[in-house]
Amino acid sequence: MQPDGSLLVGGFGIGFPAATRTVETITFAATAFLDVDGDYHLDADETVLATATTSLTCPLRLSSTIDELTETGALSEGTAQSLESKLHASAAAAAAGNTEAAINQLEAFIREVRSRVRAGQLDATAGERLIAEAQARIDALRAG
Ligand SMILES: [Ca+2]
Image: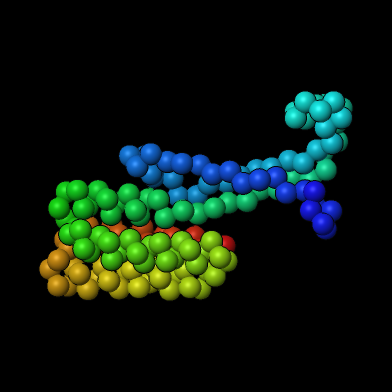
């Protein structure tokens, strides 16, 4: 029980093996109920106090695309690291609730992809794919 009378139920996370990192958004659903018989299960005669859902958007698909392009040689290790660092900065900003900063980092990501394509360091098709995925994340962040 917290000083304000709320109850904090400790955090849990979900780990993805690298090969299956394609999930983009995870939705958690929670139900608070009066557990009369103490079995941690909502029974028919028990009262629901509150329900909530929350979604987390993770840059998993983009990271996985970067890994794949690095493995096939379409991206150099250095370029991959530089792009990943922008993704991490974007994810950190999004997690902190700073959507604008998260979007700015993704826009910087897109600018870097474009300039790498122009410089001949990245194949145009791979570049388009990264840009489309980054743009989808920007759209998701804007949609809130
Ligand atoms: Ca129960």
